[in-house]
Amino acid sequence: MRVEVFPPLLQRFACADAVDFAIRDRVFQAGAPCILPKGVASDATLRQYGLKHYQVSRRIVHMNRRLSKEMCKCLFEKVSLKWSLSSFAFEVWGEAEGNRLHLAKNGVN
Figure 1 (cartoon, rainbow, N blue to C red):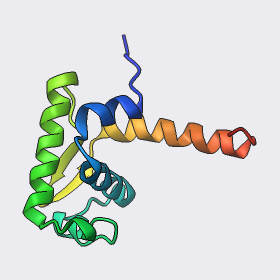
Figure 2: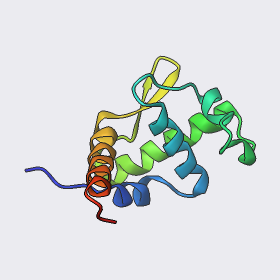
Figure 3: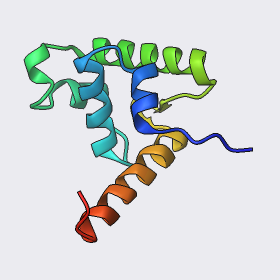
């Protein structure tokens, strides 16, 4: 049996504040190639928070821990020194993005 999970539910469980949302968005934008924590911290939208690379990694680990506690799933996975969204997260956000694009194509807001 598959339980449907929606992005707002995932965000509520994993993201504690606006910085967590921004980190999640930046890693999602990176897509399959992954991204170094330094690349996340130096992003234009995150530069205003003054994060260091180790703070980005620490926040990602905390988001994984919070989501794992609620759903036994991880939001991010580590690939060597880089971070990427897990296949579970890509599945959830990919479906939501696909639905949004489909609705926009058909003229539904």
